Amino acid sequence: MKFAFATFIQARLGGTGALALGLGLALGMSGLTACSNDPADAPVLDQEFKLAYGKQAQLKDAALTLDFVSVDEDSRCPSGGECVWAGQARITLNAEELGAEPAALAFTLHGTETAVYREYTVQLLQLDPYPSVQHHPDNDEYRATLVVTRTAGAAAASR
Image (cartoon, rainbow, N blue to C red; front, side):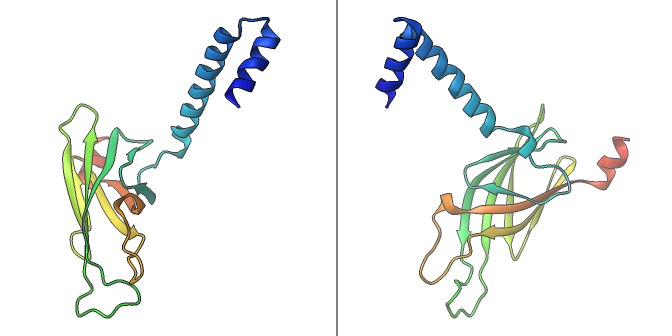
């Protein structure tokens, strides 16, 4: 396929296909990169959003970046199973505000579901997928549903 594309470019541009191909690929790749980092899709304060394991979210209306860095435990009773304890899920996010020291935020579903970083409160609402008897998710399958709010004192101070 790429050879057919190069031949087509060479035929159209009279032998200067290598240069045109290089430019075309560079422009095409930059277009793909721009689409994958579309700021219109960025999460905003006070609204739920999902963050995939290993991914980063830059809040649109705050200088805050969150990275989903680890699933430390998922001992939730699997659907279809019988357990004496409901279990819990623990994850870690890294938080960083522009110009500030980053911090690791630990969350436990069915435990400590909120963490405060500087002027932000981050809440873990849900962790998907839920384990089942047939399947325990791999780390790269996890999605954390989060909401970030500005703490009351910080909101008043910024006015």
